Length: 604
Image 1 (cartoon, rainbow, N blue to C red):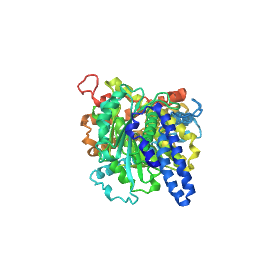
Image 2 (image 1 turned 30 degrees about the horizontal axis):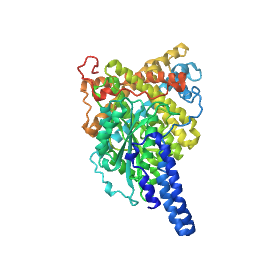
Image 3 (image 1 turned 45 degrees about the vertical axis):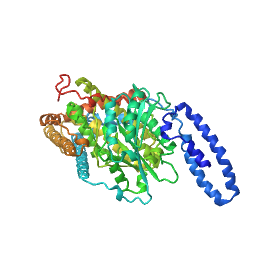
Image 4 (image 1 turned 60 degrees about the horizontal axis):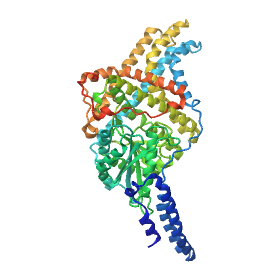
């Protein structure tokens, strides 16, 4: 038996690895290190004696063995956490973010008090309002553009057999989902949407990362293995241990552990061609949520776009599908539904076209994923921080490319109105604290990117998470009232250089409010126009009366949203790093929605 065959026969497959306890892996590692040394040394001597030709052949052989042994068996060892760098839990760069927010929102108070500036106070409020509306127009143009792309792509025929693949590259997919206490039925619904993708059995590995504290995790693993093992090329379930160094609770640390484990298992599987020297394989990693429904042709559309760009572009590209929060959305209260519609609109209006950040479900090459060291287990918002980490890895701006396939996600849910309010506010709080922490991470890495990239990203990030989501609605409510009052308080008089009096100023402000409601109408319109391309022919069945009511309540909802964000920024300022954890919102009612006739959940 040759050395190659002897080693190949001993390398376990992924099915065998699933039965190996993690405590045995170190012994396996030592066993194969000894076997490699014992078997390869005579061949190395023979190669040296027989000259350069044999040595060259041995070099090729050694690379093959090295990839099978060093890249597989020796990398199977369990991820044991990371050594977190010493950091101050309170003096952090998110303090600057909070300062900028409150400096701007209080400008309606202090600007009228500055003698050299108060002559322009009314004009300043007007100019800020004009800028805000211009940015809304940009978002509308972008959202309508992506809506048109989604509708056009629905009738597009994907022909992967016609792509220019001269190197014979094999496309494989690793799709990761994380779960803690979410209902099993909800997770299975998401997995079904992946299993129904074309050629899932031939090219998709499905990864489910469970937390170590997931109730009945072994039974859930058994159910999932039995049902979905035959539907995918590989099906892997991992359990994220509690208390790993550098981890905080949440999807970020769970997926970091699950992805590292899965990639090592695939490399160790002799029947999976991830790192065989004579196979050219591109593994695309996709992360998702357990309350999602993937678009019907998500992975084919991803592959088609993959072949449209150069190999260099792929090294810094992340693919994002437009996300719509429309699972049982018609049964949600007005503030939940409005928030869901706005998030989908802002994703197509700002996040994707402006390369601000990915959200929930996105894809990238394994090479870029590994260069960025998977996901950061110490920051709760794995999607917001992802683009920064990968940009740092390639030392340039990473680009988000839209996959023209709609993907669905679940909004927050509760069993009654009080629960709905609580879950809605808790989710906003989590997003805000996560954004503040990501700002801190970006600030400390600022000079590791090209200056133009850092400045551009900082401006867009502060605008979106600071100005638009946290300040804009409250400012447009406070400034028209407070600014004239402060001018009167300092005996200036309510007049400016262009705006003659308070009456004219209030007419302008009410005009802007009316214009704002036109922009709100386009948010509802975009959702309506995109419904024909939703997976599984999902429809938002909200009636016209409720739609009108929700449209009218959009501005109050945004004001409530801003208030929660302001409180969250204050909380992270006072309490520091200790508030940063991923407390996922409840998803139970996405599986078993409460009937609309039930008295404790009003349809409004």
